[in-house]
Image 1 (cartoon, protein in one colour):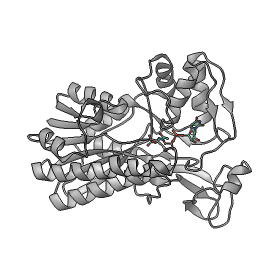
Image 2 (cartoon, rainbow, N blue to C red):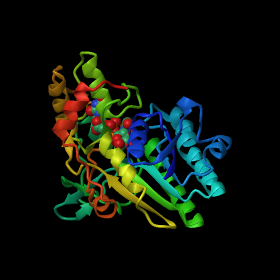
Image 3 (spheres, rainbow, N blue to C red):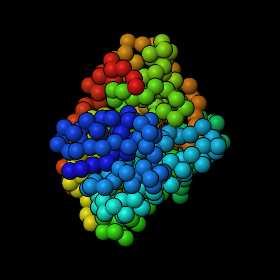
Length: 328
Ligand code: UD1
């Protein structure tokens, strides 16, 4: 298939490009680092003729530094996707694979012994300051057990990045309805792997820990280290993108969790990476970030059933490789 890959020069985009080519696709890249911008109708009009599918990875990522970042998130992620979809409609490109994120859910799913499945709201500063990191039942304030979140859970974005990822999904769903196009949103969980960019204020936790180790510093684990995530290898993410090109339904956006299905705590990840690197043991700091959620872990069953996708890299093996591989 002829494919336009946005964000092709990025960490995930680079891996996706190689996987698409290995699967026999004809890939053209568009990336700000190589002189193309998804916000430019002119750049898109040059890139799209003859293209059958767009794999859209270009985005501003991360939690952001402060509200000064809002215009940039909206511009790159929301406005950029709007220009892309409009251009796809102009050129009759009927298929979109969108890099979405598990951050659209906000807090993960939880079970209360009395109230069943609940979705707690944001944690309060007062609780966080006291080291009460676990969200409590919104009905009875009882402790909760984290559960695996499925794609039909209501969206509840908690920061600018999450809001713009959800907006991308909504824009793509509207495009699919209007044009009869096929949109597949891949809700990535915490991606890691070779070539991950070095530590910036916008980096995910795996890059931050790996960069600290390389600088001879201990990974600094926030909260009490018990926050649960699903760390998924970038090679598996790439395979999910290849599989998504054969999935979806005309006139709709279908969203999938792209996760390993084997959650770990941030503390466990720090320990595994530090041990594999041969660096200092992690330090649990008790600090917190207001935009963070406590646990997000996913059931990847729908992607297995409908896309035939299953993550293949085991956590311990992936972390060993990540410890040894150079950062981007
Ligand atoms: C991350 C990404 C998000 C991406 C999503 C799915 C960031 C900021 N977030 O969300 O863009 O869509 O995965 O791939 O890039 N932590 C530490 N020490 C640190 C930094 C973070 O302990 O130095 C903790 C945080 O408090 C949090 C956890 O690690 O509990 C995960 O943090 P992070 O990777 O930044 O954000 P996610 O919400 O998991």
